[in-house]
Length: 422
Image 1 (cartoon, helix red, strand yellow):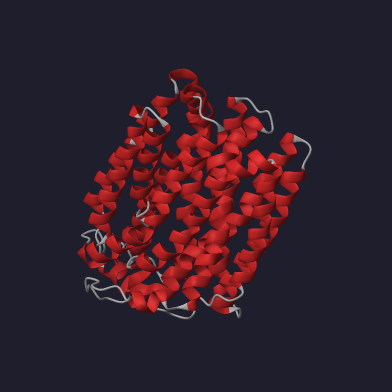
Image 2 (cartoon, one colour):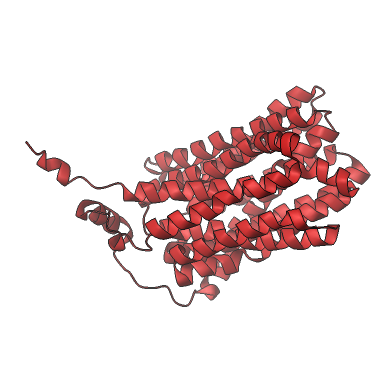
């Protein structure tokens, strides 16, 4: 006998869309972490000093920062299906191209183009969820997508270390980016810019989505830049994300080198401990977005819920950064770094849920502005760190990170997720 009530249950296409987005985030970090894991061997082969290598890695950050807003605009203007397909193909090609580079300048150019390609990924992916994910699920959705990115970053150092030891550093740049090409094909064939255009969505799921986010299929035209850029809240959110982005860049770009050069770990152990730190960030991403969604349904409301999680994450992350820098034992320094990464990542699901909260159909552009400044922080961090180490030692990096964590907490006291700006 047919179970008729089952026919009225919503399908789960929105969760498949979320799963594909998680996979995209994972691939972005797998590709960008390859060079940080390969950096010691690249330096040795080309005789690059610390400053030169950090400037090469910083070139990615500058390309990534400068093209955040154009990348977010692409998703808003042309739709996430076409925009994200092209973006992933572009960055996959550029990531692989570094194997043919012959000098510091050619590597900088290649990394800049790679960063330019990845710049549109997060803003456009955020826009791709704006018509699919229910408001009450957005914190968790942004948390799990960024957990995917950190998981990609976490498994990559150990994986790249193994590939390097067996096949050389160039092999890593040829194998990992191939995942992007596969993902782009699947995304284009499966995803649709509006749930009503997807054949797998039944009437119950469509009603559930449209009752929460609206049924409009209007193609976004002119982005209200005057309202977005004229909003004080936009700049406060961007400044807070700058503080976070500065610290994240250290763990992604320089932490393996720090473990190898300052803490004396071998290439194999370096890969393991660098992966462990990023893995701690996965749990922070999952916990922060999920917790802020739960708290938003209590008497705290959306504004306080987002603030409590982000402020706590920044402050506890800052304390852990100080302890990591002061630890005498190398393994103890790694554990404090794991703690720091966990707490800092609590802020991420919140930070990326807010553009959906306040940006609506222009979430791609709002998140693009925010992520621009987050990655300016990352670019400054990676480019500056070589000089900090050269003139003041590694501990100077930890002092700057702790200071910015306190500033990030203070900035979040002024952010209201209930106040729409566009």
